[in-house]
Image 1: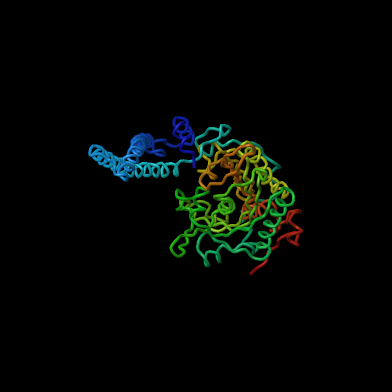
Image 2: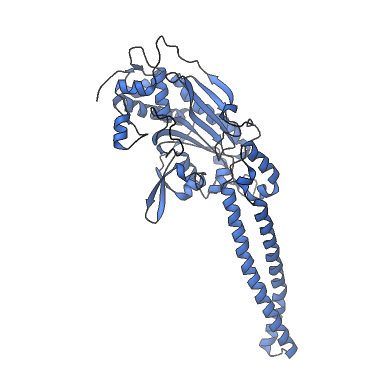
Length: 440
């Protein structure tokens, strides 16, 4: 969430940033100016009434003291009655306009909940995905002396990916992995966690898969993206299946103040993720690219505001290292202003090459949210030498999406005989050098 005072004092800038995002400021901000003018008028009335009450209170107090002593004249009694009536009127005004100011604050809160983060100045301006900028690429695409197959064909032929039984168990966009297919998923998760904890300095955490509404609000999923989530009624309140470990891991420090000396704080988590994929009907219906349930290793950072963009570069490189060690060709794209997520100030997408489909596909999205999430979740730190706490900057990225890495390995390491080689880095985790056809 953006800071209300910042929006009020920089409304023209906010409107311009929203246009860069491809949004209509009038639709996003609504009647911000009208609510602001109304609130200011209410505050003026409220403060005037409070000032008048404060002016009258000493006078009434003195007259009541005289009344207790029995020295109050008839004229003073009349004055006391008049002042008491005036204070009662001012009290009613104060109570009324305190409610009006509170109602205006709620209107502001409702408006700000729907305002996305503002793009960082380094983000390229664009109207859509076609305007994203390639920052770098690594490796080269493998060459085949046969036509490479997509993972859904290979998985079925190898007997390691069972979409039909996944649909029987749960419906469309669910999958069952068999034997070395299941083991490859587990090996990838362990490999990624070991890399990030041993070499990159992250602390591993295993959070709940169900979180409360406050957690979803803190990272920006609620209220705007409720349709993209799986809601689980639980007694008198709702729980939600996490769409990514970003949600519980970021909210570990909700309503807390982190010691400045601990920043940057780097956490990693392996979890299942659940997304309803609302609005994605007809997209990626083949294979396991877009599933309702998938696994992911997440990287989350809490950083000092002055150093958060350095941490974004580090986090992105940490995610890239996974692909490099697996020998997978990829490119890094800087998302343009109109293609970034709701909460992000800057995002790099890492896209891996999938030869069976002949395209690059996003496998990690690494973002700096600046104080946007921290303000919603009230996550602070106290700068050294300062008495007042400030909001931290939060960052996250996939390190990596395990299912899509599975896809990349199967498609990039497929052989002419239909088998799939296991990358060297994974063989200690797999206990096998290749996947060969097997029926279950």
